Image (tube, rainbow, N blue to C red; front, side, top):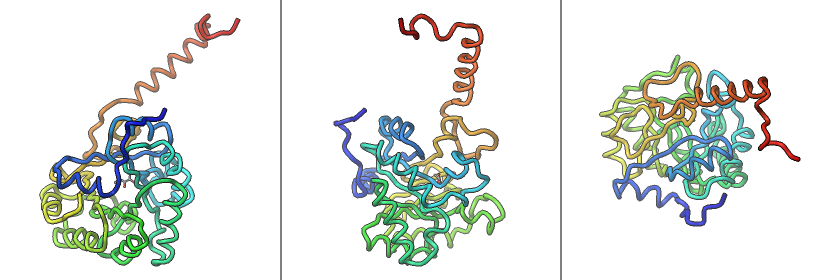
Length: 267
Ligand code: KIV
């Protein structure tokens, strides 16, 4: 279904939301149906996150998903979206292979998916790459704080509390050209401080209410995730139960001869 009234959110319009003091919303999307549905709700940005590795592919970490797989899914999302700003994660290690390779990889994302920006994990250590991508016309979101691609270095998913380092990370990411900084799993007062010091918007996940906007993994937000869900998630629905009830009702109807009924058959 096309929505002619939808006015596309561009990077400058997205950045302007901070100055208008309008809180920004972002959700993850990995396929056409969900991206179209979420876009119709007026969410500001859709992120094709490398969380896909865990919530779609069933891996234990975000590390296994490949660039080709990200592009395959981002292309579905890019085709569905009419309004939201669309951002695609650079999967591990596509931004760690030097400037040339990073531009080539991020360039593929923009060329092949119709999405508008990339996100990469890193701040100060990725400043050179953020600069190279921005110079090539590729808008970059920097992801600071907990960096799930570093899970093996960190020994788990832990709240990051190094105030000075995190301030520097976010600041250098902005200086390098990032148009937005995502802050994951850091204390709320630190995120508020970073948000006040940056000119570009901050988007928090597990970073408190002081950020310019919030992002959640859609599967967590909808109650689709089985097993462990981080404490910072607020489930807005219980779709696991809804889907299970519908599938059970279908099986019960078929087994009892109630489906298909007269309305679902051809004469
Ligand atoms: O991959 C992802 O879903 C993320 C979250 C922090 C939103 O990066």
